[in-house]
Image (cartoon, rainbow, N blue to C red; front, side, top):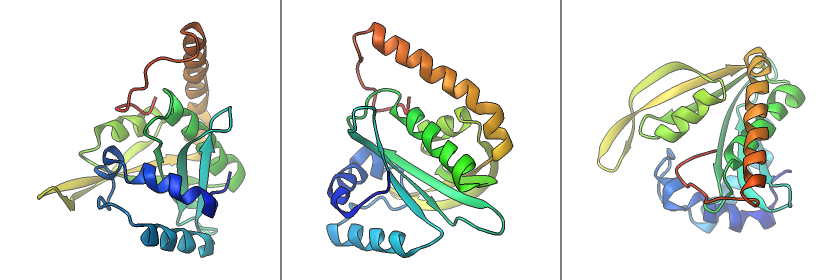
Length: 193
């Protein structure tokens, strides 16, 4: 569902979690006023959309945003992050819903992402979703007293259509496994699921 102002406190707490911040291009702790200003810009920007992901019980577990949505080229960028206590598989469920929204509802032809080379989990996750590595921006980001590269990914609508069945199958297997294990398991903060 669309992100609303009452959601911002919760979302900012996720964004400021150390495991999220260290993998973002802006790794400082986000202030309340800075977060409100970001939300105001997103709301006014017609080429952007920010959504809250809720699980089947209506509990918020993540946020996804699309930016630079082009009416002419049908290209866009995406980003996301999860709640620290999100259940296993939440990242894949969020991605499934978000990618279906981007390609099937918004009508995006190509979805792009930029991931820091130090964020190995996100690099593997994008590849699992079918994204292709398309570019390398050398020494693009400076954090923790060192430079690191940024990796550009792209996913075409036709590639998502060809790949989404395998992701849906993984989610069904995960749901079966969780049901067998009495609805859960231990959350692994180092995996998008």
